[in-house]
Length: 68
View 1 (tube, helix red, strand yellow):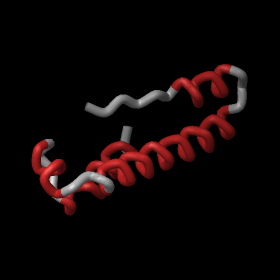
View 2: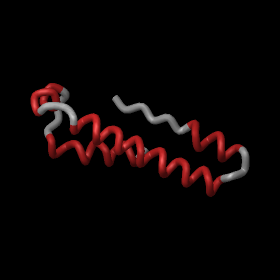
View 3: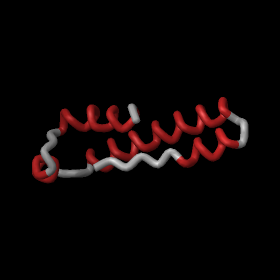
View 4: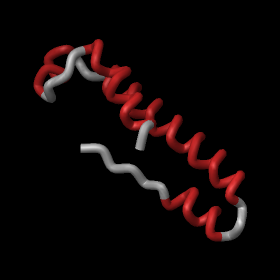
């Protein structure tokens, strides 16, 4: 299960800095995908299989994190 925390950009947007909020959201989303990719990359093939993934799925999972 993926949890997306978008409160960082929402706080900035309420203050009237929409362009900055967009940049912050983009960087935060990129970082979330990077962390997901790194965490899954550290798992063994057996551990990935236990959660229903294979090595080829890691990029797709990280990409789906970016789309939220």
